[in-house]
Length: 136
Image 1 (cartoon, helix red, strand yellow):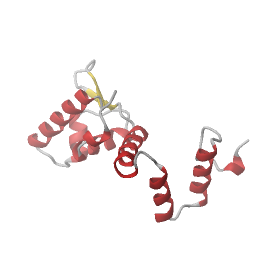
Image 2 (cartoon, one colour):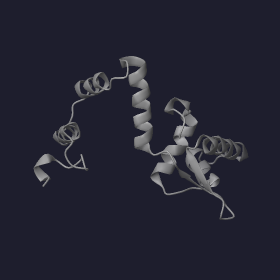
Image 3 (cartoon, helix red, strand yellow):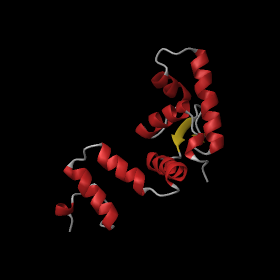
Image 4 (cartoon, helix red, strand yellow):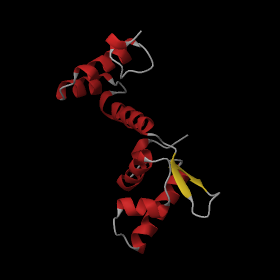
Protein backbone atom coordinates (compact mmCIF):
# COMPACT_ATOMS: atom_id res chain seq x y z
CA UNK A 1 0.00 0.00 0.00
CA UNK A 2 1.33 3.44 -0.91
CA UNK A 3 2.16 6.03 1.72
CA UNK A 4 -0.20 8.95 2.28
CA UNK A 5 -0.06 11.58 -0.46
CA UNK A 6 1.36 14.23 1.87
CA UNK A 7 4.65 12.31 1.75
CA UNK A 8 5.08 13.28 -1.92
CA UNK A 9 7.45 16.18 -2.37
CA UNK A 10 7.06 18.77 -5.12
CA UNK A 11 10.09 17.29 -6.91
CA UNK A 12 8.57 13.80 -6.79
CA UNK A 13 5.29 15.19 -8.06
CA UNK A 14 7.12 16.79 -11.00
CA UNK A 15 8.52 13.35 -11.92
CA UNK A 16 5.09 11.74 -11.60
CA UNK A 17 3.60 14.37 -13.89
CA UNK A 18 6.12 13.45 -16.60
CA UNK A 19 5.51 9.74 -16.10
CA UNK A 20 1.73 10.21 -16.28
CA UNK A 21 2.18 11.69 -19.76
CA UNK A 22 4.24 8.81 -21.16
CA UNK A 23 4.29 5.07 -20.63
CA UNK A 24 7.85 5.02 -19.28
CA UNK A 25 11.05 7.05 -19.18
CA UNK A 26 14.73 6.70 -18.38
CA UNK A 27 16.58 8.86 -15.87
CA UNK A 28 18.12 10.80 -18.76
CA UNK A 29 14.73 11.42 -20.39
CA UNK A 30 13.27 12.63 -17.10
CA UNK A 31 16.28 14.86 -16.48
CA UNK A 32 16.00 16.38 -19.95
CA UNK A 33 12.32 17.24 -19.37
CA UNK A 34 12.72 18.53 -15.82
CA UNK A 35 16.09 20.27 -16.24
CA UNK A 36 16.59 21.19 -19.92
CA UNK A 37 20.30 21.40 -20.53
CA UNK A 38 20.91 19.92 -17.09
CA UNK A 39 24.31 18.67 -16.02
CA UNK A 40 25.48 15.67 -14.01
CA UNK A 41 24.20 17.18 -10.76
CA UNK A 42 20.61 17.30 -12.06
CA UNK A 43 20.91 13.74 -13.38
CA UNK A 44 22.05 12.60 -9.94
CA UNK A 45 19.15 14.47 -8.32
CA UNK A 46 16.59 12.72 -10.54
CA UNK A 47 18.29 9.38 -9.94
CA UNK A 48 18.10 9.84 -6.16
CA UNK A 49 14.46 10.99 -6.33
CA UNK A 50 13.56 7.91 -8.37
CA UNK A 51 15.28 5.64 -5.84
CA UNK A 52 13.22 7.20 -3.04
CA UNK A 53 10.03 7.03 -5.08
CA UNK A 54 10.66 3.38 -5.89
CA UNK A 55 11.10 2.65 -2.18
CA UNK A 56 7.81 4.46 -1.45
CA UNK A 57 6.04 2.45 -4.15
CA UNK A 58 5.25 5.43 -6.39
CA UNK A 59 7.31 4.24 -9.40
CA UNK A 60 8.46 0.92 -10.75
CA UNK A 61 11.78 0.21 -12.43
CA UNK A 62 12.20 -2.16 -15.37
CA UNK A 63 15.68 -3.61 -15.01
CA UNK A 64 15.38 -5.95 -18.01
CA UNK A 65 17.03 -3.44 -20.35
CA UNK A 66 20.53 -1.99 -20.12
CA UNK A 67 19.02 1.44 -19.49
CA UNK A 68 16.40 1.17 -16.75
CA UNK A 69 12.90 2.38 -17.55
CA UNK A 70 10.61 3.88 -14.90
CA UNK A 71 6.82 3.88 -14.87
CA UNK A 72 4.38 5.48 -12.45
CA UNK A 73 2.64 3.08 -10.08
CA UNK A 74 0.64 5.80 -8.34
CA UNK A 75 -1.81 7.23 -10.86
CA UNK A 76 -3.20 10.76 -10.88
CA UNK A 77 -6.70 9.79 -9.72
CA UNK A 78 -5.31 7.79 -6.80
CA UNK A 79 -3.14 10.74 -5.75
CA UNK A 80 -6.07 13.15 -6.00
CA UNK A 81 -8.17 10.82 -3.88
CA UNK A 82 -5.45 10.46 -1.25
CA UNK A 83 -4.91 14.19 -1.03
CA UNK A 84 -8.61 15.00 -0.86
CA UNK A 85 -9.19 12.40 1.86
CA UNK A 86 -6.26 13.80 3.86
CA UNK A 87 -7.55 17.34 3.41
CA UNK A 88 -11.07 16.30 4.39
CA UNK A 89 -9.72 14.62 7.53
CA UNK A 90 -7.71 17.70 8.46
CA UNK A 91 -10.25 20.42 7.67
CA UNK A 92 -13.69 18.81 7.62
CA UNK A 93 -13.68 15.96 10.15
CA UNK A 94 -13.50 13.46 7.28
CA UNK A 95 -16.41 14.78 5.20
CA UNK A 96 -15.82 15.52 1.53
CA UNK A 97 -19.05 17.52 1.23
CA UNK A 98 -17.61 20.89 2.36
CA UNK A 99 -14.69 20.49 -0.07
CA UNK A 100 -16.93 19.62 -3.01
CA UNK A 101 -19.38 22.40 -2.15
CA UNK A 102 -16.58 24.95 -1.99
CA UNK A 103 -15.10 23.82 -5.31
CA UNK A 104 -18.47 23.92 -7.04
CA UNK A 105 -19.24 27.41 -5.74
CA UNK A 106 -15.76 28.89 -6.15
CA UNK A 107 -15.43 27.98 -9.80
CA UNK A 108 -17.97 28.22 -12.58
CA UNK A 109 -18.70 24.74 -13.87
CA UNK A 110 -19.56 23.99 -17.47
CA UNK A 111 -22.74 22.09 -18.24
CA UNK A 112 -20.64 19.02 -19.06
CA UNK A 113 -18.91 19.24 -15.67
CA UNK A 114 -22.28 19.60 -13.92
CA UNK A 115 -23.63 16.56 -15.75
CA UNK A 116 -20.52 14.59 -14.76
CA UNK A 117 -20.98 15.53 -11.11
CA UNK A 118 -24.68 14.64 -11.22
CA UNK A 119 -23.83 11.27 -12.74
CA UNK A 120 -21.29 10.55 -10.03
CA UNK A 121 -23.66 11.58 -7.25
CA UNK A 122 -26.54 9.61 -8.72
CA UNK A 123 -24.30 6.61 -9.46
CA UNK A 124 -25.14 6.55 -13.15
CA UNK A 125 -22.83 4.83 -15.60
CA UNK A 126 -19.12 4.16 -15.48
CA UNK A 127 -18.15 7.19 -17.54
CA UNK A 128 -19.10 10.33 -15.62
CA UNK A 129 -17.74 12.49 -18.45
CA UNK A 130 -20.61 11.45 -20.72
CA UNK A 131 -23.60 13.83 -20.45
CA UNK A 132 -26.81 12.20 -19.22
CA UNK A 133 -28.56 13.04 -22.52
CA UNK A 134 -26.13 10.75 -24.38
CA UNK A 135 -26.37 7.78 -22.01
CA UNK A 136 -28.48 4.74 -22.76
